[in-house]
Image (cartoon, rainbow, N blue to C red; front, side, top):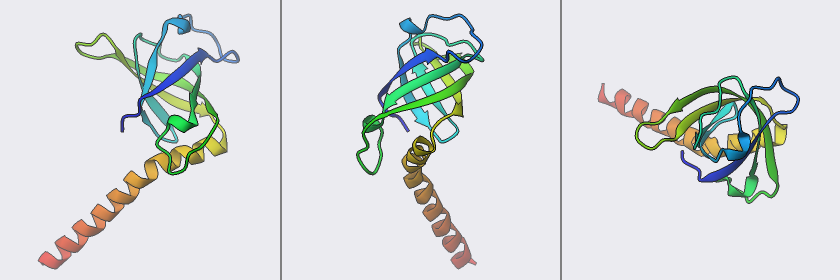
Length: 131
């Protein structure tokens, strides 16, 4: 899944600080689940940094238009340079989010999961009828 969503990131004020310049980071969401997300960033974000991330719900591919801003706290679990474009692939594990935001994120991934389940059922039927 690729979602061109601009993400506002700041160090979480309640977490131990790892120095980095959040103001100069421009990041875009490329993957999201109820457990974490992936960003493409113009700079490396140090491993272990706890971030307060904000993005508009209306920019997500939800079944229903939803207003407001998601605010999710997460910890950087990897920051890997990408080959050739000078950007970084950053993985973040969620540590805090509202139940409402978790439910909305589940909706983003539900259609893919349902489609995969249907494909598995079709494969099982095909295999069973071949015998």
